[in-house]
Image (cartoon, rainbow, N blue to C red):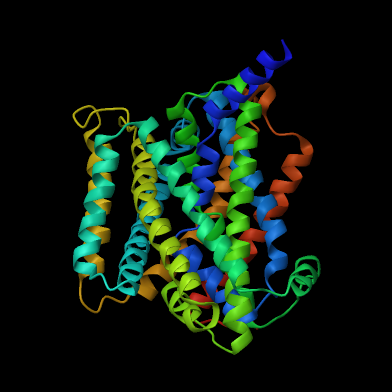
Length: 414
């Protein structure tokens, strides 16, 4: 009997597994890898202490999304449209579309950069990957997409191996993780903002809740969904840890500061060996390809839900033309811009991160209002402790977002 019960529990968990891990893992994309590489190469192990609060905040936000999706059976955009003014919904959709265009461009930039490391022209690799991503979404269904994305998550082990090959100082790492380094240096503060912004992005909240609804998860699976989110948060932070460790132990130790993920991959070769460099580049390619599929999908979900259009990868093109049209538009635009000569990628990518940072506290406030509405959530609404923790997170994120925006417009605070 106990064996049968255990088998049932394991089966229920495996059926539930997916949305939390995929949503969190995909945020270790080209922009995330670049941010972690910069943090490690510029400041060594000094920023490792941020991992624990980031992990807690990530779990906090993702758990609320999963809970709302399971209890209401609706995506976040649906709930915002039904419970707030149309103007708020439209402004959110416009801001998120602009942000995600920048994010999709960044993913194809990561694909192009990783290809060039291996001597593959972007004019061959980017169109091929764009077509692959489009075909995967349009021709697949939710189950096939989820399986493909879960397999892609396995490639993040490349960064774990690269970090171990760098032979880091584990004593120094342990000390840095439990002893926060306080600095008023503008670059240091901006990297903290970047680490938070790249790990907890607005699009994640919309995609996760939509994925839960698309998967058809029920209230009796809620406990297993929390474990899924917890695993996703842990995986995200572990990958962040090993990228920072790999670059800190090699690049920072040798006085080499990089400003992109591809620079980090190339700089690792003479310091950690050709295999570590190759693993870093492979990880960048898979992460970028993975995110190039998820981000257009996430954008289509929240825009179509926000305007009440049909959405979902289980639907045919004729059943959800706006959904698939928006996905196609984002993939084509993102890939085409990367092929455009002399396009200023860094300002585009940075502006998208600024908008990300500014929108996240707003979205969190809306999520808090919704999840505390007893008419919507019933007994599944937030407790006092959860609201206090979320409130502190919103204040901290708002402060960081203001710092980031001021920095973008050239206003120095420190």
